[in-house]
Image 1 (cartoon, rainbow, N blue to C red):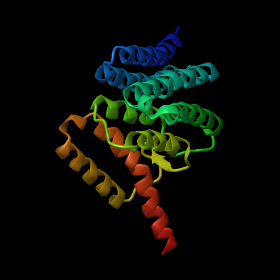
Image 2: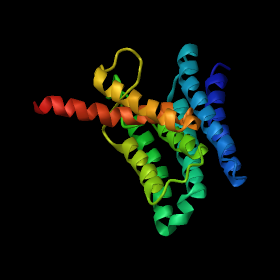
Image 3: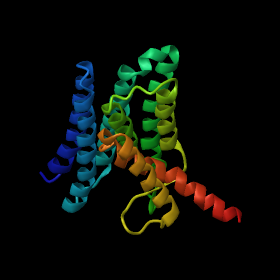
Length: 223
């Protein structure tokens, strides 16, 4: 009986992902983005519920990865394609598939390395990656040129990269003040220019934090 609660939350994650895709079919990008963020909320609760009830296991881990692929890989990829990538021909197909595959690779690597990687996330977590793309689309800002396909592709790459991202559990690697200040300043400017980026901003900040932090870490090591 206790397993029903965490497994139900995991299933809710996928349900919201499916709802996001259905909203895309109706061109309701705002509601689709909300569904992806709600999927992220459900995803953040299922593991906690499993640990609280002492029912963590392989079944839950596999179910979680499959649901994450749907909610944070397929749903945002479909959103991106319908929103703008469809206008880029074969390149749009390629970026859409690349993003979804990056989420699959990211989840597989996480499952394999879960006992080896401690105190940080290796690569941008897939829920954050899916959410940053979905909430960008929510603003319905049609960036000129190839900016949007590059944005989606870069987010996909960050997920399969080895860049360290904080997990905010209090026992990970400390982040230096400079990357945090630069990230917050960038987000502050974004919010000033685009007040409608209020939901995109926190996910964008987290996405930026990894590369900026690694830049300062590498710079200090080279001194």
